[in-house]
Structures are given as C-alpha cells and as structure tokens.
Length: 190
Image (tube, rainbow, N blue to C red):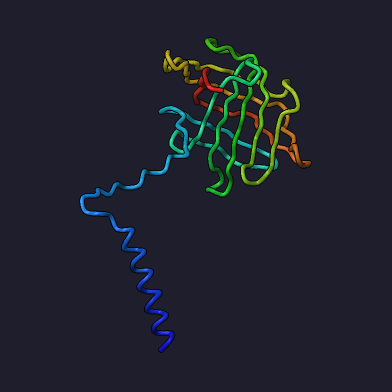
C-alpha cells in the first residue's frame, strides 16, 4: 500500500509539472526553425571531377547539389585558396581538397599557376599534401564576376600534379593526375 501511495504522489507531481508546460490560451505555437544546411552551394553548376590514385583510390564526380565549396584569399593576401568537400565512395569517405594558388590575381585567369594541394580524409585523420609549388599546376580558364558589390567570382579550371602528394602523418601518398573544377571565390572573405 505504501508503494501505491508513493507512486501516486510521484504521478501527481509529474502531472502538475507537465501541466505547467502547456501553452496558455491565446499562445500561438511556432514550429522550431529548420536546422541550417551544412552544404555550402558552389553555384548552380559547380563541380569537382577527377581520379585519386594510391592510398585513396577513388573516382570523384561531385556536382553542385552534393558539393561544399569555399574560396577566399590566402592568409598572406597573395592569390586564393579553394576548398572542395563532399562524400565519396558511396558515402563511406568524407574528403576535402584544398587548392592554394599564390599567383592567382583577382581579375585574371591564368595558365600553369604553381599550386599547393592538400587532400584531407575528414574523420579519418589522414592528410596528404604537396611538398612544394613545383609539383602541381592549375589552369584557371573561368573567372567570372558574380556579384560586383560582394566581390564574388565563379572560378573554374584544371589542376595537374606531376608527383604524388605525400601523407603528412604516415608513409603513403595520393596521386592526382588531373582534377577539373568549378566553384566560387569570395575575395572579401577571410
């Protein structure tokens, strides 16, 4: 009998507490705001296509709907840094590829621009990177202003690497013979 009385008391306290959670008359309930999308659009036609060989053998064919991209000036103010990220290999592998182009000018496309490239296996802790500027070259064939006030451009071209990107925290490597891309660069971003 004691357990029944104690259980009834707990039930009454819980009911009273929950009653305080009910909206009062005239209170309009608003739906919770939708979670912010984690995907940053790469423009209407953004893409990253190519093949990785070596420690991460994967074919990349990322389109604007599944691609996260960012482009901004490099910290030193020389050139730009482009970042492309998505899921590869049927959803089993999250990759980010960063292309740093020190000699890229804000209003000028260019051929054979020396580039540093980094491949990151996100969540896996593996990093691959060029050892110097002589290993990879980028041809920028598209550099179109999208928004004069915001200083945003559509940027596209091809990256070519003549030697593998060494693993920073291991002893393997990744080779990127050719990588085609179309993304965005925001010259006002930091």
